[in-house]
Amino acid sequence: MKNRFEGVGWLKKRRDVGRRSKLTKPNPKNPKTSIKWTSDSVGITLLNNASDEGHFHLIPMHVYSFIALYCRSWIRKRAWALENACKLGDDDQAKTILNLVEDANERQETINANSGSLYWASANGHDGLVTFLIDQGANVNLAYGRVRAVHGAADNGHAHVVRLLLDKGASVKAGGDPEGAKVLRRAIKNGRGDIVRLLLEGGANMDAKIEEEDAKTSMEFAQESGRHEIERILVEHRLKNQQSTAF
Image (cartoon, rainbow, N blue to C red; front, top):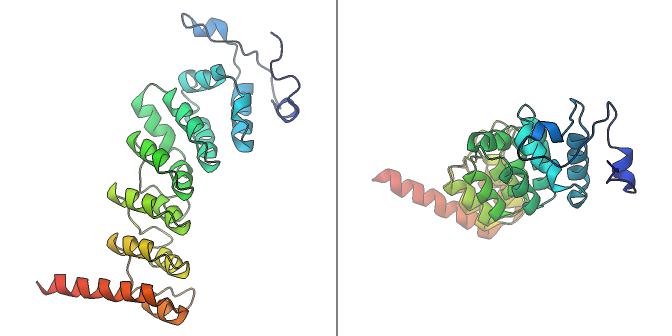
């Protein structure tokens, strides 16, 4: 068949470094007869390259269809493409990649095979996409490096996403921030009182010290930084806890 990618410079140069494979539109009655596919497939390479550079519109829908429906052993490849879509804030393409996978368990596996998908959707403040990923089985407490999706949302000032994640059972404590003190510190530094409230409600420890930085508590940092409004929020939270423990 004629190369439908002819003239697309970056795509043509990066198509495939190994064996070539012919890609034709799938035949619903017998997909195996209409697609010749190799283990070093041009479709996967195109999908990854397109998602990396934000050129989803150059990939025909039947490429997505093949990868989503027939490449059962390449879940991680789809997961990378999904993460890139979320990182670029392309909600439509992220949903397209998942909607083409009919099996609910496989959709869940695709999302959780690469924890960056939920993290970047949260960090970009795309609450609709975050809700979609969670509804499709995303683990809200899956670690992305040493942080979680709620940290990405908090660090970028998306209070509505922080609340959404906490309502879905997200924890503010992670491997790199076992007390939630670091993400709380960053919210104080950014002057985001609304996010500070949410993090405290979510279990962040305002009395924990960040030893590797300055060994100060959140209250001490707020006082020294002149964040008086946040200082009042911290005081109110402490009094509220004291009253609840008194009863």
